[in-house]
Length: 99
Image (cartoon, rainbow, N blue to C red; front, side, top):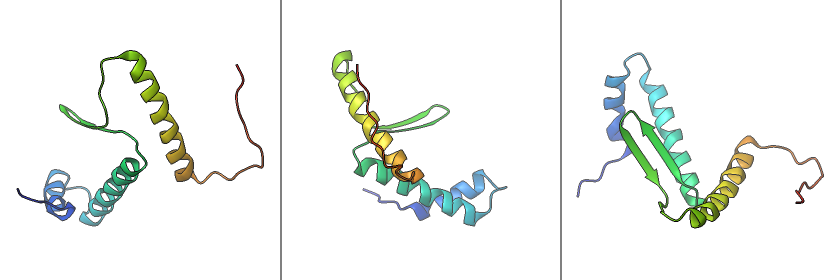
């Protein structure tokens, strides 16, 4: 099995996008990999799309009721990650919804 690291892709990306400096490509790749790791470590799903290439890290299912519960759990994770990323200050109130 051949193991590759992120450094193996810098030159290929620089050849594909010659107008972007190599230092910027390195920063973009490092941010992307760190973000992918963060979302996976929190239990979130990741979908990467580019033309005809799809990469999905998560669970696929046929049952729509099970998927709805799964989707609700993943949405909570997504909101938690985004809240931490945007560093929103707490205003001292707790908000909740009633039905």
